[in-house]
Image: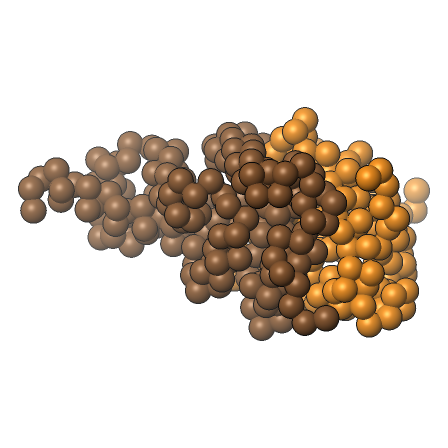
Length: 190
Length: 190
């Protein structure tokens, strides 16, 4: 590999290790030393790739943005059920995200601006997508702006219940039940 | 005060300081030293009241159980809107809870058994309350067992969005919109 490519591959490996470390201990609980150890580097060696812990967090959050759904899909409501089904197959990724979201509400957390901006954008894109499909009212009577934060809340909230007790909570089934409430999916059964 | 009462008062003061420390830094990020400092004790002095950090966490979680709603209300659906409205007035308490919930999904977290058990119990009590009021189907067509995890998810999920951006997210209004979806509250407006 060319030096550039080798460095990029190494960076990607470090980001993956950081994702695992955050899933295990949260961001504040994860040490650079433990990330370095996972990839067989000294802490000094790690700083060559990421000069500070916050630099590594920026890379983790950029990686996190790749998880959401098809790029440019604009948070289409009809793709969300598929996203939740996909998330059931990758509990580690959901765990990293849920741990970071939980921490982000503590004081001066470096991920707080990221999550604040992310939710502003996701709510707006969902509302736009719902308006394009249903106009000013969803079949349930809610406006797109009322439905968007609820869609986000149900996805996030179910993840915590599911991570804590995967046998008891069927996240995909529960999310589909919510979509039938919203009226964005044909109701099944009676 | 009698020594017993004085000790209880001191313990309560320490628990309050721990709640604040968790809101600021999470449980893993909060040090016993920082809690001791808040109440004017040495770390050694603090250990007289709580021998380990986990002992302090147990007391914090017991305190947390007092926040939910009227004791013995059994998570009645018709009281949940009032609970959410109350939570809007105590962002610090919501922040402590949300930070702890987020952390609880990381590996071997000492609060994980507490939250797992809590959600099992809350979902069951909500379902029982909904069945008592509506029978096997809510007005929206969902079963009580389908509605309960969604109620929990919406409450938890909205708290994160609200803590991150209280100006943009009206938690109480959004929760009422969800109740109209469920059909557990008369729909207002059109």
